Image 1 (cartoon, rainbow, N blue to C red):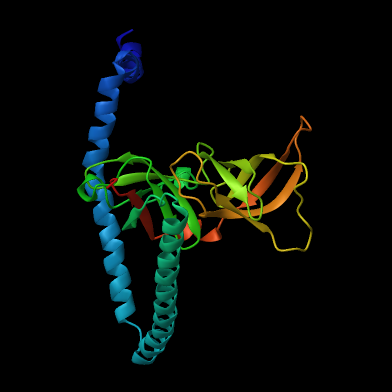
Image 2: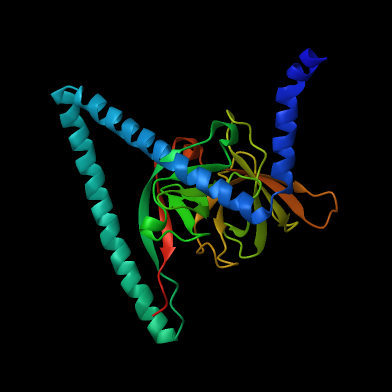
Length: 276
């Protein structure tokens, strides 16, 4: 009898722990989860810094010829971006002049905060990632996160030195969008994406007169600005297919997201500036 009791003791202990966790108040659970995250955050950040150091020393092993060629390529890229910055400044000045003439309100401005990616959970590869900036850089909740290819996602959790970003490929993220060349809003949502497969998104409430032509370049899907979280005009992906929905009133479609989403090492957080 005692032998059976000893064998069942681990399961009994586990059941008691689970029962105690279920009856705990939600506030205590949230505090426990946040405390655990803060305790593990330095380990994740340290691992990210170690990877950066490994990459630095691996670059030191390249030959001088390779470094010279890389320097030339970088110089060409810098020249291109310098020209783009000059054009952007001219366009901003022209936009401000037109807004003043037409008495239009200016768009909300953002502070661009670059952040390194510290961790990406393999079990939820297309759902979220952790960046190495948090309250220490005044990162707010729901701030848009972008990269050179468009939207990465939005901030869903902010901690002392890290933040959690929900990716646009996550089924939990939904927002209003425009198909390129059409100002009628559609609903975008992340898809159910396999870990090792390409990321996809879905669109709903697409007008019936919207089509995709086989062989033609896919149309871009951009943020509409409705809802206030994301500024308008940010690229979400490319619409590759639309078909009638089950109710026959609208169409649904498939959106191909940027393949570089699974290789991100650095992103940019758009931090809203306070109203003047």
